[in-house]
Image 1 (spheres, one colour):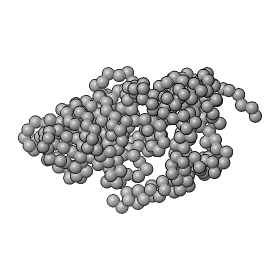
Image 2 (spheres, rainbow, N blue to C red):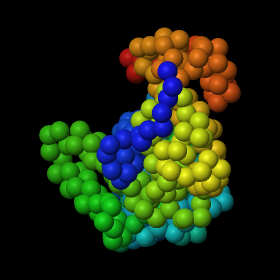
Image 3 (spheres, helix red, strand yellow):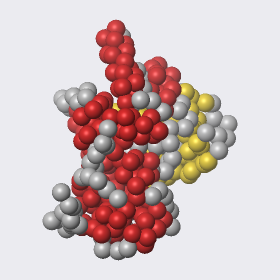
Image 4 (cartoon, rainbow, N blue to C red):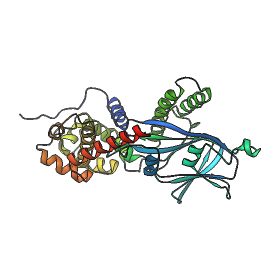
Amino acid sequence: MTETTEKYAETTVDTRILRVIDDVLNSLRISGSVLLRETYAAPWSITIPDSERLAEILDVDRGTRVVAFHLVELGHCRLNVAGDDEYPLVAGDLAICFGGANHRLSLGRKGGNIDLIRLIKQGYNPRDPNKLRTHADTALLCGIFLLQDTALNPLFAALPPVLRTSLPRAGDLHNLSGVARLIAQELDRRAPAGGYIVARLLEVLCAEAVRAHVATVAPEEANWLRGIKDHVVGRSIAAIHSRPGHRWSVQRLAAGVSISPSRFATRFTEAVGMSPMAYVATWRMHIACRSLKSGRQSVERIAASLGYESQAAFSRSFRKHLGLSPAAWRAREVSQEKNLGTTDGTT
């Protein structure tokens, strides 16, 4: 049957792009947990291990990305990442370490170092102002976000190693201060179901921080966030997401946004940092990972749903992006989940 050029959706461009952002955020299945909420008298220093070590210590599935976050409720401090990059933080600042590197929070030059995990397990804060009978220089709320299915997720790949934002910063596209206030109030109340409510609010806090970041992406930076904000590229990304198994080509995508294929390909690549067809393949592989992990479909059926003419062609593309065959990748994920379940049941 001869295909005809078509417009990809009947809804407005803005609605389609919003749905794309919702889709990639939903695929991360964000959850969260508070690890500590303490005050400190200077000098002090806290070290936080990298994501893999945190996952191991906290018995988190290896397929889950552990992302540390830190909210300064009072005073100020410094955030030093992997002994290199340093960021000043003041009251109201939120730092989310999406890059997963080990890092350190500190104030003062001669503070005794405190290991985060030891602080959590022992519950002893040697720089507690009440015990030292002095004033508090810093109050911190620290925790983790748990992200699922980060493999080839374009939003996750576009996030900075350290996302910093300020709760009081004015913005129509986020309500960070309101969410943080609700979290603090719920922690202070210590009421029934408080843990459940805080966990849900942390999901919203992470999403609000990402939304605030989207609004401030530099126009010259080539990544997915710049692409989604471009009204031409964003429409083509929305089309790809709505029909990942379609027989896409540069010509079909360009026709959908009414510009020439050459201009479209250049504009897409400059905005996103990869060619249109490379993006199609990457997004298909992200969906494939999600489908394989759920275990509800065969490899052959997943391949067909994503537009591959054969299972062999799908497997070649999957191995190119993930380094394993689809069957081997699925077996590894299932094995990790079983091992986690065994560990959780014996501790």
